[in-house]
Image 1 (spheres, protein in one colour):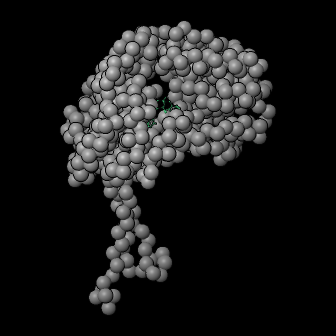
Image 2: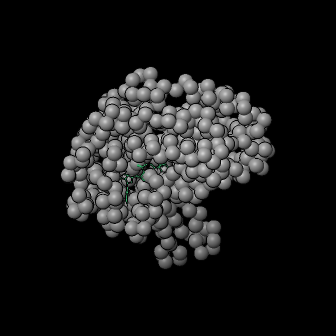
Image 3: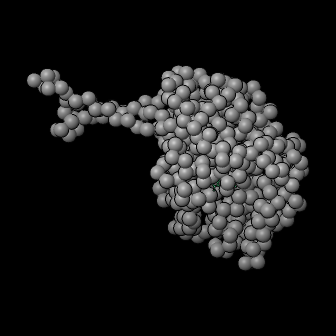
Length: 467
Ligand code: NAD
């Protein structure tokens, strides 16, 4: 039962209430926007060294309370505690990286005499804050992904309004509170908690907002684009990432990577391995290794130290994952592992040769199962890997440099990892997708660029200096 005016947060594992927060109504968005405009003025007047110090202070405050954030993440997302700790640490690290990037930001001096009309002139660019940024985050890495929006927005001298998923607002409030503790005024970083369907349109259509940074599903990305109007938009959307395993690969490393990247956070990662493409000659050996490693996963209470696979976010999602596996089986696939659930705990799945048309192969699963198909030769592998409307990240296991380079060039994907699974990200790398996986880049430096105005100054010679 939900309480009117409140967002009730429940543990995906036990169903217990782990938080209750007053929700923001659409009528409050106007005041939030006005306050953010004031906050943006305050931020724009802060020099880089002061912004950096504030961000360092926030990172320190988060690091001090890492265990608290980890517990929140286990409670609201249901991720195993050791994964939650890792997300908490990475969240603090992103803010620390933002502090450093604030000090590294530079402009460009143009070669003005590259054309005759520019001779005698000095031209340079400088980055200025863009004003108010709206950051909309999904449920699966609610702290780390919020950090990748809020941190760069503040580093670039903007005010930010964070809209977390209504399922996971507690970690967003943790972040906001640490930013406030570090000395950011309340109006520079606000958090609006409530239904995306209700708050999305007033928030995203507000003309005082200059930039929206969204991470979430393709459907919601489309809804935001439809109401945003004339403002900047970054969309980090879904995917069904592939892992390619060639006959010259380190098979055990590839199997370990497939299972790690396929089942972390119960497969609820935009870059998790979903489609494994393996050379036909290796299939049986490779699948046996995968099955062995999947059998080592421990499904259960995410608060227990031994658990490696927790629940998925809702019962509806658990049901969907199981039904997609059943659909693939019905269409001729062999289900080697999984296909069952107990409440929101979905058994890890391993499905062999689903037809290309099966949802499990074609759509984004966002759950704990991997599907394996074989290929015959490099052309077939490339064609199959690219046979998707998504393009976020791909992993390629090969020890042949020519092949690695060919696939690095030929794969249509925002990131290509050679000898790693697709799930690998650091604060400094450009990150974003092709096709339906979205547009625009995250990664602190790149996000800051997208959250800044680039001003060009040209100093022309005076008549006196020309004479
Ligand atoms: P979602 O799209 O349902 O929700 C994401 C956010 O959008 C939430 O805060 C939600 O409240 C809000 N929202 C919902 N309707 C809205 C509307 N009409 N206007 C504005 N905001 C609205 O996604 P989710 O279920 O929270 O997360 C899963 C999805 O996120 C998957 O598709 C996954 O691939 C994607 N994702 C992508 C990346 C990436 O970096 N590319 C990372 C993580 C997750």
